[in-house]
Amino acid sequence: MIRPSAVALIAALALSGCMMAAEVPAEAPAAPVVDARLWADLSILAADDMQGRGPSTPGGEKARAYIVSRFEEMGVAAPAMGRLQPFEARSRRGATVSGVNVMGVIPGTRRGDRYIVVTAHYDHVGAPDGVIHNGADDNASGVATMLALAAELKREAPDHSVIFVAFDAEESGLLGAKHFVEAPPVPLESITLNINFDMTARAETDGKLWVTGTWQHPTFRPFLEGIAPVGGISLAFGKDTPQDVGPNNWVEASDHGAFFRADVPFLYLGVDYHPDYHQPTDDVERVQPAVFQSATTLSIQSFRALDRGLGR
Image 1 (cartoon, rainbow, N blue to C red):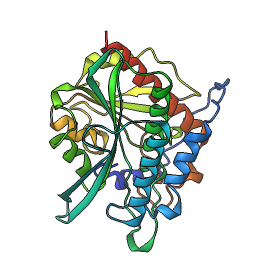
Image 2 (cartoon, helix red, strand yellow):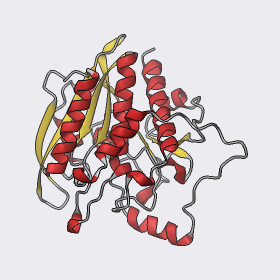
Image 3 (tube, helix red, strand yellow):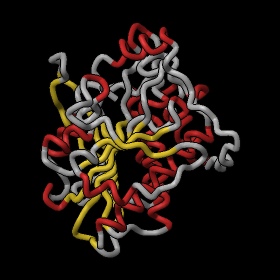
Image 4 (cartoon, helix red, strand yellow):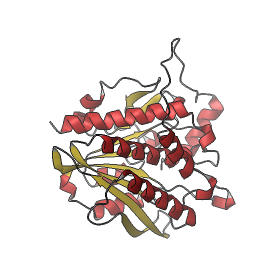
């Protein structure tokens, strides 16, 4: 994820002691059972042998091959234009970046001509100065959540058709997402909604999975407001108003920003800052399995509520 001045904000919070885990209620909800496949996807994508999943690196290629294998294993078909969407673009620093998006599609049962595009970037920052940054939360977690949703939709098909996209080169400036909206597999006007998962694991920071975009698209919020907390983690709405400034405004903080710029409705689901963000310490060992499962369950419930609500 790209969040302006986030490192400075995290440092300030850590020094002030303001960044603390959410208080546990006297009778904490029972922890959900952690799905083994979800945890395996997270662990494999955030392993050292992925070398930080930088674009145009062997580690990035290995992560891409793994995501392809998971789609194939689940029987998630490729769109008509193909499974892979290669691109070249300029990074924020002016370098030419070669990347490859990975796509899958599940047909809808009631609104097959309308699409919800579910996205998560699989790249991370690689190994700057020879130090591997595994990016467990950013964004192996979002990809694992997306794959868990795909598995759920293979068990019970959605109302809308769903395009899944694992984006490359998000950390270079949302490059994979920008290419997707410039050359989409379906007309942009047929896309009802983009749901973007970026950093879905570390919700223990404040006990919340944040939903950004309902200020821009207020009709979405009523579909989500009735979703109950899971394992002590609840949905929270915000970080998208004119009053939310700097690193506290997430409207363009990740790949959903490309959809926002293209006037495609979007919602972003992710957790708040934590001290391991963009650090070599963002490892699987820092993730609490039950918290990650809770956030993923909330993500899946959010998709179902939106899919059914928008299909009426």
